[in-house]
Structures are given as C-alpha cells and as structure tokens.
Length: 318
Ligand SMILES: [Zn+2]
Image 1 (cartoon, helix red, strand yellow):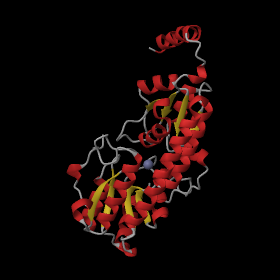
Image 2 (image 1 turned 90 degrees about the vertical axis):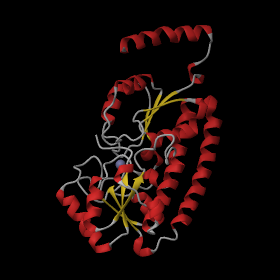
Image 3 (image 1 turned 120 degrees about the horizontal axis):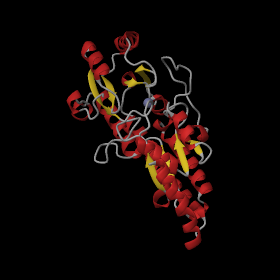
Image 4 (image 1 turned 180 degrees about the horizontal axis):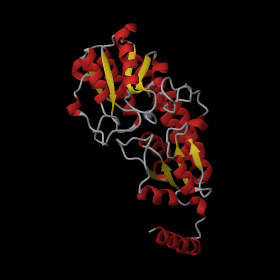
C-alpha cells in the first residue's frame, strides 16, 4: 500500500507540474488534526481551502490513541499536522516518526502561549494541564495559531483563513459571555465540579468553580482505591448536588461513588471529543454550551436536563 501510494505521488507530481503549471503553493493543503475538537477549529479556519483528516474518531480516547493504518496513510500524505501538545497526545512520537521533517507539526496549545494551569492530582501533578480549550479565550488563541500557520503554508488563501478565524473568535467571545450568564445562577456552595478525569480546570478557573476528578489525567493509572478514597473524602466534606461523567470514559467510577454517597450522576460532559454529528456536542460551540447547561441544571437540582443514567451512555468502555 505504502509503496504504491508513493509511486503514484512521484508520477503525479511532475505530470501536474507540466500540464497545469500550477505551483505547489496553490494546491489545496492536506491537513491533519489529532482529535475532533481541534479538527473542528481547524475546519472553521480552513474551510474549503484545505483537505482535513482527523486522526481520532469522535468518542475515542485521545490521550492513549493508537494510530490506525488509515492514520499512517493520512500522515504520509500530510502537508501540515496540528496537534494540541502539552502531552495530551501520548502517541506523538509515532507521528513524528512517520512525518519526520517532511511537513510541519504544530502544537497549537503550546504555540498559542496561553497561560497554562497545572494538573492538580496524580502522577502528572504540576505538569501543564493540556485541556486549554475548555476556556473559550484559550480556544480563540488556538484559532489565531491555526490561521497564521495555514496562511504561511498556503499564502493564496491567507485572507480567507484570517477572516474565518476572526469571525470564529467573535463567536467565541459571545459564547464566553453566554456561559458566564448561564452559570451565574449557580450558588457559591454548589460550585464544585467533580468528574472522572480532572479535565475541567480551565473551565473552572474561567467560570469560578472548584474542580476535581477521580484521577488527574487519562494517561495515568485509572480508578485506584486511593483515587476513589480521596474523591469520596472531598465529596463528604462539600456535598455537591451531582457528580459528572464524560463521553469518552466509563461512568462506572462516578456512578459507584454517587451510589455510595447518595448523590445524583449527570452526563455526559464532553471534553476530549465532540459527539457524533447528530449529538449534543457536534462542534466546539455546541460542546461548551451543552456542558454549561448540563452543569448548571445538575448543580441546581433541575433533574429534567441534568440527570441521566448509565443506560443512556454513548460510549461503553472497550
Ligand atoms: Zn483528557
């Protein structure tokens, strides 16, 4: 497969150059993004001026993804790879090995230079928390990195990239305001957001919540007795109204903790992946809006929208 594709490329390039006289710079760039949330942002900026492939499918666990044969093919064809960075993708070494120096690899979160916060618990405590996109202002900084990079590799469409990024940034500014207003009604004593992975730190900082998780980062040991005991102690002390589960993880830890402590369970929250296209979080803006509404309703005890059961869960653990 690989050698065939290579042979095809070697043949196709000189032919195209001879026939069309189209310089390589104006060809549609083939762009790869590592996961669906970042893919949506790249798509918003790149639009029809790029060909985009997202490596991890929706619902997949981004931290410990294993590259598929199709992923390798996409990486071999890529003109540019966007990834989050700050060790979100534990599998980037394989990507570097495949792409080499042939195409730029851009760590969007790192390049945004947006202020990071540390991972709060577990074996990665103190490392930069990679989930910056849970703050829409950080996401606006991502858009700028994406637009600048695309403009550099494909100057013919630079104005379009910048215009789309600017429009998307304005949408994010309104989203940020909207979420702030939505959550304003949650009383101080209910502002504790407990999830499975402690991935909502940026969200919590931005909207004035306290936050913790059963574990600190999906790349570490998951669900040890020590982790469970630590979070049960926290719950006993603060008695939040609900615990939350995430779309890419099993809900069994929060569900069993909730059963033991008599709390409601609400979910899914979306953080490491969008939902399917017909789901509640089919793009970044929908994801943030869904999360905010779910958190608000669950912590206010409005069970109609805030509570669900494990039977409704979309992604069973494999
Ligand atoms: Zn995560």
